[in-house]
Image 1 (cartoon, rainbow, N blue to C red):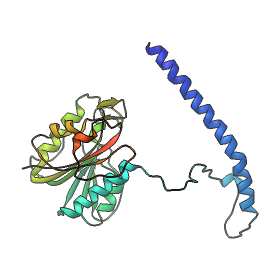
Image 2 (image 1 turned 60 degrees about the horizontal axis):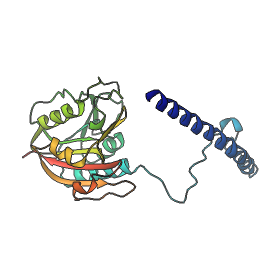
Image 3 (image 1 turned 120 degrees about the vertical axis):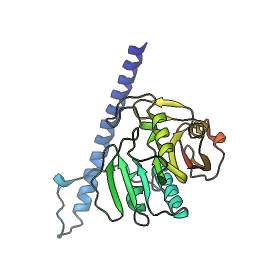
Length: 252
């Protein structure tokens, strides 16, 4: 049965690749016509040559497409930092765009299993293992780890395989969070499952249970094909396919 499923998936993959080639061939003819039309309009200060082409064929849409998870969760987190200002914010492996932009108004120390070489004021990057953070207990007043926990232990980023890696990471985050400190967590939510080796998807109630010794200050959600919804009931999103759950916890 496993072999049959693999063969079926391979056939589907080859079919999709073939369709992609056909589409590109179709668009190439139109692209060439469009290129020549543009070339004939004439301009002398910039070189226009076929060998410099950069063919983009899928952005002629009526509206701007965007990744709902990453646009909304970073916007939510930035608003949280504005609402609860601190002298220093610590982030573990979240979106770089969030960290670099938010560092314009709050100093940020960014820690990642694969540290990044970025030179900006109020921004620093260091290496860290989320399963063994180099912080003492109860030491961080403002902490975020967004769209990260679901990957820990799946080996996607060169980390060791560990089925319970996410649970161990959660315990580390709780350990280093200071009393009355704020923790911002973002994970995929909906019907609980593992999409190996990309990520896990959690029942939204399970995340609250994993952080059961912290107080939930806010739950927000970006539902399937929806927009950010703040201060909503996590129970209402248990049947989503791939929604985004945003949690603001506090250690009391």
